[in-house]
Amino acid sequence: MATETANIQTIITSAQSLLKGSDGYTFTSSAKMTGALIQMGVIPSGMTVQGDKTSGTATLYNAWGGAVTVAPASTSGFNNGFTVTYDKVPQDACIQIATRISKTGLTNGITLNSTAHSDGKVTTEEASTQCKADNGSTGTNKLIFTING
Image (cartoon, rainbow, N blue to C red; front, side, top):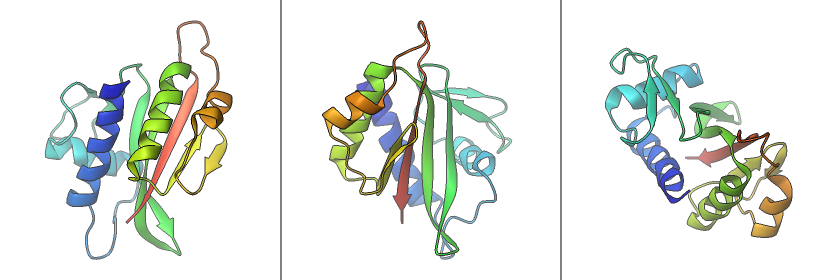
């Protein structure tokens, strides 16, 4: 869990420092934005990349085989923020990652499945309730981290 938490932090800080221009995050889709980070070579080495890393269209996956996407997010009609989405996260990891990222102050919002925490704060009690049980050995949780700026 600590590795995936660090991966999320790296993705957030890399996107903030490398992808934001004077007009915000000027990407048309999550595929383009995620592909650009992969193309720049700033994705943590332990993450799975599928496709040609140099193409700008490669895709990214977490340790559980879930898609990881970075997408522009509009605030007041301006792409001044972005989201990092993590799919197929197991329940135990969901609880730990949500609370660890919450403590960093890096995010303005965290969504656990369908429950949004618009202040970016998630307690262990909240995460324990909102992170769903696994389906066999497959994680069923989707975490979305929102960053404004």
